[in-house]
Length: 121
Length: 253
Image (tube, rainbow over all chains, first blue to last red; front, side, top):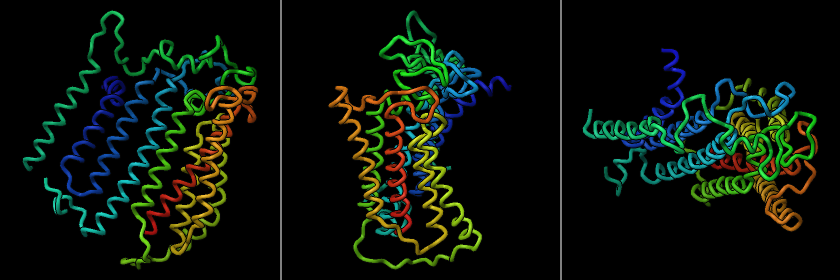
């Protein structure tokens, strides 16, 4: 059971996060909840990318006074660099989405997408 | 349970099944598959070149506080990927953040003063006093994180986020707090121009955009890694200013 969790909590869990976020985006009607779903999908993708580069008992890819040379086991630094980019882009998208949500609320007085004129689901 | 929810569940199960298939492909000769968890083969990946700092040279051994004049002198390998090997990507990323901040300001722009249609209680004494003590310390912590980005975990984006947090606390503590928007813009523009300026200077002296034109020094000392600390300084100030302007725009609606 523990080994199953160790092996699948990162791959399976991150895919589960992506799917939960997608379910929220599809079924919820509140714009804030849709944005939460998008943010969950974002997090899931990030966790999946980082866990693809994991090495058993690997260290963080930083040379320090304890890990003095590059022969020790490091985890893959490239996915971490990519995920750092993805997090920042995710924040930018979330902020822009919230701004549009504020404007929609000012114009229509509701956050329910089924009550906004011109959008039918 | 509505029909729409059941449809969504079915769609999600199909999608999850398809994604999981990617982990079950049995490898054929010379085919690349996804490794099992915890068994990533770093030796066969590009990452090994970055760890050895030997993309353009033949370097095998990097020793902390001994090796000098390496290809990229940063002790933090993630930083050397972000701010040296792939700094053009980082320039694009900063541009995306800048566009998002500008777009947010454009979407939320109103030229008539609205009065708030909700009443905000004044912040408690604990929050007010705590912010007074914490504000300079948070700015200091953010600056430390992005100046030491090539030595310790962290970097420009993280330090910028910490600086924006300091301003968020200030907004929470004082409801009437107004930001000097044009000063923020000056910081942002100067940081962005210095990032591009470093790249252009490298283009004229070294022949490629954002190449490292300084001595990389000894791994693990503060004045090492060439232009990486300079790039991270500009990124940190720029990200801090942009996130602060996002917060101030969202809070003043």
